[in-house]
Structures are given as C-alpha cells and as structure tokens.
Image (cartoon, rainbow, N blue to C red):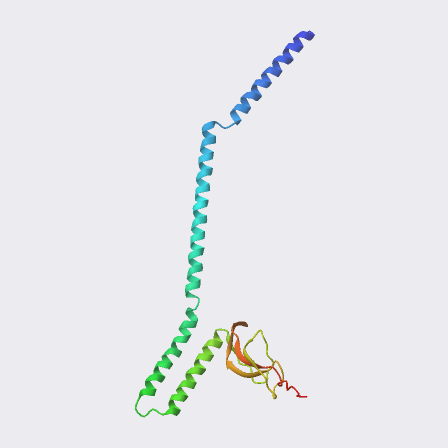
Amino acid sequence: MSESKQTEATEDEVMEATQEDAEEQTSEQPSIEDLQKQVEEANDQVLRIRAEMDNVRRRAARDSDNARKFAVTRLLEDLLPVCDSFSQANEAGRADGATLESVLEGSQLTERMLADTLKRHGVSSVAPAVGDAFNPELHEAMSIAPSEEHAADTILMVVQTGYLLNERVVRPARVIVSSGAPDVEKAD
C-alpha cells in the first residue's frame, strides 16, 4: 500500500472514532426532560425536609411548653396531702372539745409532713444559729446592730429561714448582723 492510502485509511479511522465518541457523549448526556425531572424531585425532597424540620420545631416547642407547665406535677401531688392535713387541722380546731395542745400537735405533724415533702424534692432549709458567721451567699442582712456579746459579722437574730433547691439558693436566710461592740467615744 502506498503511503497516501495509509494516510487516508488512518484519517477515515480517526473520523469514525471521533463520530463514535460524539455519539457516545450525546447518548450519555441526560436530556432536558431528564434534568427537569431531577430538579423537580430535588425540589420535592427539599420541601419534604423543610416540612419535617417545621414539624420537629413545633413538636420541640410543644414538648418544652408542656415540660414547663407540668414540671411541678410530682411536687404538687406530694403537697396535696399536706393541704388536706391543714384542712383537717382547721376542722379539728373548730370542733367542740378541741384543745390547744391537740391543735398544736396537729400543726407540728403537718409542718413535719411539709418539710419531708420538700426534702424529697431537693429543698433544704438555711437556718443559721445566733453567733454563726454571716455568709452573703446564703444570708441576707436585714439590718446591722452593735453588740457587745457578738463579734462583727456574726448573726444576732434570724428573721426568716432561707431555702435551697438542689444546693441553689431560692431564698436567702434573712438575718440581723452584728457590727461588733459599739464604739464609745471618750470625752476629754
């Protein structure tokens, strides 16, 4: 074969191969309809995901709201017997033949019942004693008074008991604090 025939044969083969590649690429590329269908499916999927996220947000808000509304249910269930005890004590106090001792005894039992209920729910009292050091994290100074008997920054009197909920101050104990012995000015 001559060289020109070989070149023509090679050119023909290259042309055929190029046409076959072009046809393959054309057949591999998706049509516009296929692309539109894929876009619609993707949009539909996005809408479904957005709807699901909205549902999750609404459900979480509802659950949070319910948790806030009903968080004290157990405490309330435990306090209802204490309320019943107060009602019974009031009725017993009005009854004929009720004595001060029996009413006082019923009142003390109810107070213990309340203290036990609060303790079960993590509430503890802050009841400092006279002479204890003043602690601003647990006590609130209602006033300051001089005292010869007590050193400065010690408690002279407890005005109101304080309370903690799981070691967090709910209400500090209200106290009167000593400023120490009064200063006596010497007259010259």
